[in-house]
Image (cartoon, rainbow, N blue to C red; front, side, top):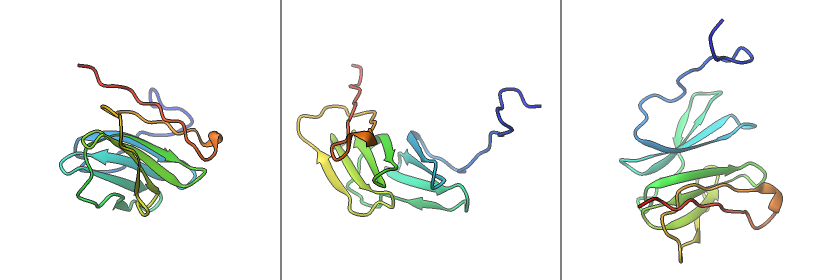
Length: 130
């Protein structure tokens, strides 16, 4: 019996050699874990079933990612780029990346997407403290 473990699940290390992780989200149905790292700024994903780790963002024009939201209904991933002050979206594999918001945005940190809202997702950003 392991203290704090529910339903027989054991804590495991799913991705070795992580470097300054800022944001994490999961696509439960596809067994994918997404996260952002610094140095270099990158978004990666791990297929829990196969153990394969892939880069989702490969563009050098990506800043520090402070928030990630995987939207499972549409198959999109959203993120906040704190360095470039914008919110971006791409397919789950990083293709068809585009900027959604880049004007009048300051210190975008966290992001949540509500798939029930349809075409226009709901964004909730937390402004940084001084």
